[in-house]
Length: 199
Image (cartoon, rainbow, N blue to C red):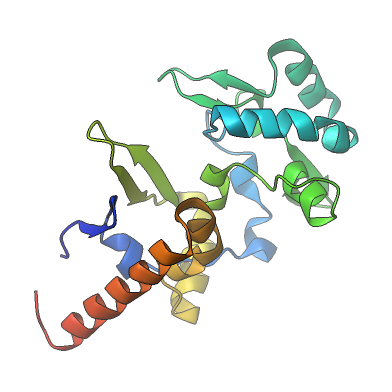
């Protein structure tokens, strides 16, 4: 098993390099938007951006979601004290909208159609990586395995798509292009060491 890997001031769990992942939307239907017991982690800046986007996404939201937002806003503090997007009926993200049997993110839909500039919380974009801020100021990235994403793991394996490669765009959005280039070099070194049978 590989040890924890450090790139810049970010610590990464080794399975980000060794596990495979690629969303299989045709099979999962976007179930990650409607499963779970809390919303997506958000920052204060993201909450401000979401609030600015509300007018463009409002008509895509369900009446229940609109009611929740009217009552408590776009986010709340969960049981751990973390800010997360508001949810409906204890599980569905308020920004879930539907296209037939598929769940979509109303925020992402509006952004991709050119109506807004904010695409979605970085915590959503980075999944299946979860980010944690450490007491020493460093950031830890951990791979999260969720049963609803079994099809994504199967497709990732079929395509030989490591987690870190699948998440190239959001990782660059979060940490920058130079950091991602260093991550790529680190991954190449790890792969070479594995081929040579090194620990």
